[in-house]
Every structure is written in C-alpha cells, then in structure tokens.
Length: 406
Image (cartoon, rainbow, N blue to C red):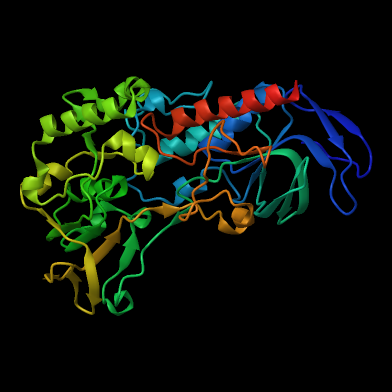
C-alpha cells in the first residue's frame, strides 16, 4: 500500500509492480492517490481490484469488516449458491475436488480468501467509508481512518448489504418471531413449527426449499407476484450451466425460454395459487432487479399441499396474521423474504446517483459524465450469477479507467 507524503510528489513501487503516483491535494485534504480506491471486498470488489491491478492501476481496497466474506459468515448454515461452481469462481482460483455443484457458504468463504491471498490484493480491514464527495478532478472520502482522496472510486458494497423487512401493521404485537430470510438459521430449527414465508422471490424459495426437507407444521407462502422460477437441475443437468448462453439472448427471447422451461418442468403453478409473474425473468432483472428463483423441492411441497400459497399480510395480531383477503392464519414463525437494500444513502445521498430504493442509477462500465471517476459494480442481479458478472464488470471498469489514462 502506498504511504503518501503530504504536499510532495511521491512514486513508490507496489507489490504488483505498478507505479503508484501520489500528487498533492488542496489545503486541508490528504494527498491524492493517482489510482483507484475500491470500497468493499466481496466478490465484486475483489474481482474489480484484481482487474485494476492487472491493468497497472494503483489500487487500494477498503473493507468495513475485520475479515473477508463477513456476510457469508453471518448467513444461515444451510446456505448454498444457486449458481454452479464452474461459474462461481474468480480468476486463477478454483474450488477443491469434491466441492458440490452448488457450493456451500463455507466453500465460498474459503474461495474468496484464497483468491485475495493468491493475488496479494491490498485490503485494509476495519475501514468504514461514511461519505464521498466530488472535488472536480478527484474524490474525497470521509472514513473511520480520516480523509482519503483518489482519482477514481469503485463502489462494491453489494446490493444486499442491509436485510429489509417492511413495517407491517401490528407486527410489534405478534407473539412469535419475525425474522429476515438472511437469518434463516438451521432448517431443523423449524421442525414441528408452523411457518409463514413472505415473498416468492429467490430468498423465499431458498427458505422453502430447505423447509420442504423438514417435518414442519403447515407452511404458508405469501406471494404478491409469481416468481420467474427455474429448477436447479433437470435430470442430472445443472440448469445454471446454460446461463452464459441465456445471457447472450435478447431479453425477450430469454424471457420466452425461461417461461417455457418453467411451464414444461412445473406445469401451471397458478392452479396452486401462485400469481402469474408480472413480466419475464430476464426483463425483471433489468427493470426491478428481481433475481430468478431456483426450485429444489419447494414446488413439490406446494403441489402436495405442505405449502399453501396465500395473499399478502394485511395486519399482525398477537396470535396470528390477517391476510389481504380477510383470512386469518396462525404461524409460529414468520420469515420475511422481502429483499435487501444497498444502504448507500448516507455515503452517496447528496450525489443524485441513487434511485428511490437506493440502487445506483448506473453499474459496471457505465458512468455519469458529470461525476467522472465514480463507478459501481455488483449492484444488479444477473442471469450469469454474481461471480461471473463481477469478473465481467470488473474487467470493463478497468478497461475504461486504463483507457482514460492514455
């Protein structure tokens, strides 16, 4: 990592062999890193940093946690990727022999650490970035370690940084626990329990897939919209392995292909109460950033009546939940599979680069000409999955930055 000397031009040889030029900034500001600060050391941040270093860019990574893959450490024990291991690895790293086709979170944690160590990526842990501001030719970052400045900033803090639970009427009176799907825990914890899962997206079906393997009480699925749903496997074929081909298709054709596959494999799920999806799976990835759900047992449980599809919650009572159609149910536990928020409002709220839900208005190699040097990666779901998409976006950002320096 470069250690600048205030008010002087400094050139230091980095571990990766790139030249690190640090120029003086304005009065009261730190020296400007003539390179890139990457905020976030998840898959997207690490992939971007690797691409930037490979392109000769001086790069620093700021990570607010004290170790890599902290969100994966915190997620539930049953969590596996919905993406195939061959499409879920970062450049130069691989999963060890015997890793399941859909790796467990523990394998993902090891993979991220091995990738960072292999490429000796310069991660500074425990550094929280509170706010960033544009200074005309550089970016100023207010962090827990003081001010930092750089020509370019890549935001890679993730689209699922903060679990989101809506404020339902009366929820504080409900006698049972209301948890987010991120805190699912062990499937065995739900044995004998009646469970309401709110949300029929990717997280909702992940929870239902695990619950379908446990002897629970009645399970309800509250679905506002029907999902774009694909099986994890058709026979012995992992469906995600064809995602690179699907990603090359125009969105409308990909929508048709996914809808046809869903109907062919599962039949008409509206007969079991699931509402129709408002639009195709590929189109929703781009319009409202809704990820494609994966079935691994939930549909069979729906058809068997173990999981009953119901409307949205209207109100919580002490001993139950009143649904939009007036029906009352009495779950022991409620799982809110209601999505995530980026949590970027404090850091970026003054820049006008976020939509109403806090999602950046541009991503990958796209940028705002009024705010040169600001980049985002990993802020959209992808047919390919987050790892493959991280590599593509990181490389695209590196090419843009390297091209601008020529």
